[in-house]
Image 1 (cartoon, one colour):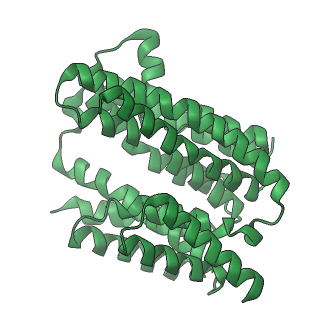
Image 2: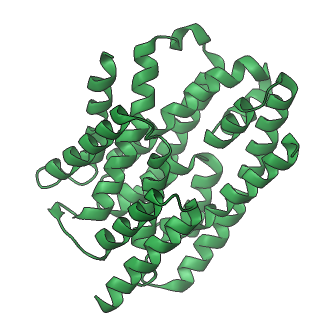
Length: 213
Length: 102
C-alpha cells in the first residue's frame, strides 16, 4: 500500500477512538464543548483520557493537568526527531507541532525515504486530527443520550484503553517490572494520598529506574 | 471558571508547549541516554498508574467491583493478541454485565 492510503487508514481507525474519548469526557462530567476543545487544542489521546479521568475520579485540576502534561512530554521528543525530517518554519511549524503525536511520528519513521516520511507525517497527522475531532463530537453527543456510564461499561472501557496503550510499550522484562512497580505504588498510595496524586507519583519510579541502566 | 475548563486550558497549553519546544530546540540537547530512558519509562508508569486507579480504587479506597472484572477480561484479551477495538469492547461488555447482574 502507498504511504497515503496507509496514513488515511491509520487516521480513520485511530480517529474513530475519538468517540470513546467524547463518551469518556461526558462520563467524567465534562461538557460537549469541553470535550471538543480538548480534542482540538490538546490533541493527544493519552493526555486527554488522563485529564478527564483524574478530574472525573475526584482529583484536583492541578493533578489532572500535571498527569496529562507529563504524558505529553513524549510528543516533544517526537518533535525533536520530526523537526530534523520536516524542516519547517513559521505557520507550518505551528501546525506541524500540533500534529506531532504517536501515530504521525510512527507512520513517518516507518518509511524508508525522506519524501515518504514527510507525506506520512502530514497525511497521518491531518487524518487523525480530522477524524479524532469529528468522532469526539459524535461520541460526546451520543454519551449525553446514554445516561449512566457504568450501565454501558464505559467506566471500564477507559482503563482498558490505558491498558491497551501501555501494552505496546511492554517489550522486555524491565518494562514489565516497571509497569508492575507502578501498579503496586499506585495501590499503596491510594489510601493515603488525595485522588490523582498516586498516578503522578509513579513518575518518581520512571526517574529512579531510568537514572542508571 | 470551572475546574473542567481550567484543566482543558492547562492541559492544552502544556501539551502544545512540549510539542512546539520539541520542534524548536536543538536535537543535541536530548541525546543523553538517561533522558531517553526516562522518557521511555514515563508513559509506562503513568498509563499503568491510570489503569490501577481507575480499575481498583474509588476515591481513597481500594475496591474490587465490576471494573476489576472488565479489566481482567481486557488483560486476557491482550494476552490472546486480540485487536485493540475487540479488547475495549470485551472489557466494556463484561464490566456492564457484572454491574447489572453481578
